[in-house]
Length: 86
Image (tube, rainbow, N blue to C red; front, top):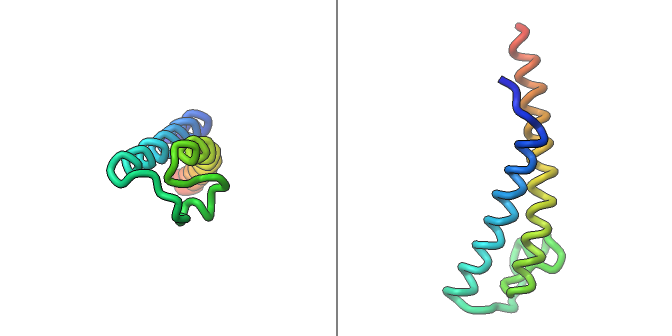
């Protein structure tokens, strides 16, 4: 079975981007706005546990999820093709 690379990439982008956005708002709702740097803040420029940071995380998450999802699906298809022929 082969994966549709575009569909998998878009779904991975939506899961990661929206998931990061919602998780940020969950932390804001429970603990309040925080200005301390986070691990993801060192990876994603502009991300933080603030409302504006959640939007930056959404954008970076969509981009990162799209790229990683496409790479994963392409590698999956490549390995499936190699292992399916033997």
